[in-house]
Length: 397
Image (tube, rainbow, N blue to C red; front, side, top):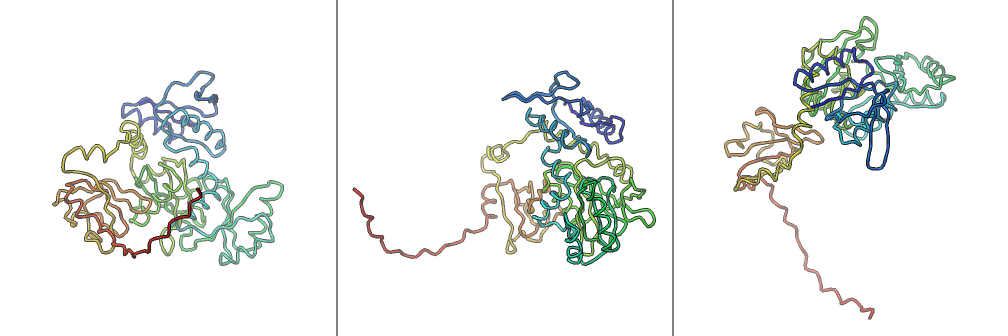
């Protein structure tokens, strides 16, 4: 494959690792500065030029777009999409994730725990808003800040008011106020999602009295084994945003994960150093799966074998499969293989034998047709009432 890595920094750790990982797997990888691209729009013939030369064909694009060039960078990605090139993260998803307020608005429509957030334009609306959040301290954030820059802890309403007046005055910066999660002060979780799973996770701990745990702010990172709740929350958040590769930042709240941010261009250095996981290699593997093995109609391919087929099996509380593991369900003994478990918006492909089957799951199973029919839930009988014959309609003729 020929892979383009869109990055302004060819010497940056993340860019270098992605190029190395692609080349180690026998692919050709080129680092392209998105600002050196020219977009040419024409009906039915989208084209890209790089340093005034027509760009040759690529199989895939890995965007590493900095926040300062989001508008132009996503336009370049969008042009690659128009040309039919697979992009690891879509342009629309990157645009949404970069706008902190918009991203939180999108996430708030789903079952994701996020801190109460306030967006104000007038300082007189500040005090009532802070009181609704439970009072100070509160976190003040710039809408477009990265790496902990533009994140301030205000320990009183007056301090918050002064910060907002300063930032939204002549500078005209847009800011958010968020409820401060006290029990997680100075530490957070970064889960690195690739495809439909968390491939690596680390806990970041702030240095000294610093409440921001970003490594760029001097924080320390340690490997952490996430439980199912945190893994599910991270994958769910990335899928809601439409990102195949994402760094999902969560706080450890008293009731579980509290989602803070979904990063569409997460750095690899901290996560690889602290966990030892080849995250760059995982990203290249994802591209291989998507590009070298395109989608096929699984049902059509498998039902060619006489007597075998594929069926979706919904699981209810009353189901014989509910709260059993894939192994203890006995499906394999009946010549049925569970290909995928669909759990809400999360897809779990090739589930492990110790994976518990929960109510609400939908199992995509392959096996003997007769056995699959026995797993199908019974159809509900509907009572039909005898109706009197309706009088003939009046004819207009």
